[in-house]
Length: 242
Image (cartoon, rainbow, N blue to C red; front, top):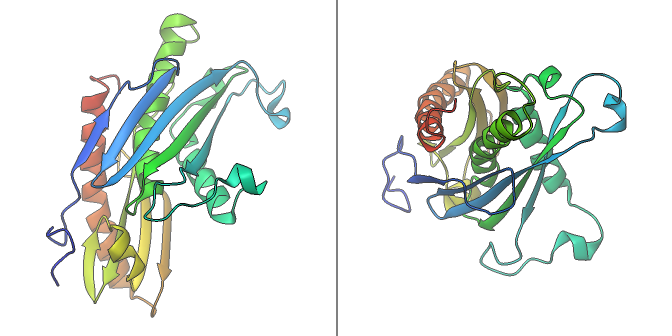
């Protein structure tokens, strides 16, 4: 099949990481993946959720949202509706889990780092872009804690983490689905991995029919290579910080 944007099946969209990109946040990154654009900011607060009080552990969490005209037609702000959708809650929990997986929370102290991921423009893969860009913002916030607060002797990151989508469209295995491809996918999968090649999360769904173990292995292999390329871009953007 010919992809809608002319890419090869195993080719990612162009990825750009702009960091830092805001004035006030302790860490920030604007990630562009093709036509998907997400602003990720990291904020440090000197408190933890009640369940972590007096535990000696810090916390990393995430919030996610799409601006009203990030899509082809305007969507009402969730704040105006009075509650977040199930999709939004599921995505921000995924982002939080992914980022916590590579942080030594025992070194943060009684602090919370909140990663805000605001989708400025959506064309598929907003959750995976949020994880990849969110890690860059998180690493900057931890560097800020080290240099400005003398919070720890070394940045408490165990590994970088990034994410990519992969799927099957018209029986063809495709990497990094855009919106048109995702809408037509027979199989849709999001893969989150660390720099050492360990899996953090795999979300895979057969939209049309069940897929084989071999197909699963093929999707994971394709994702693993792409994630290493994304992590190389993270390291470059951070100037060797991680």
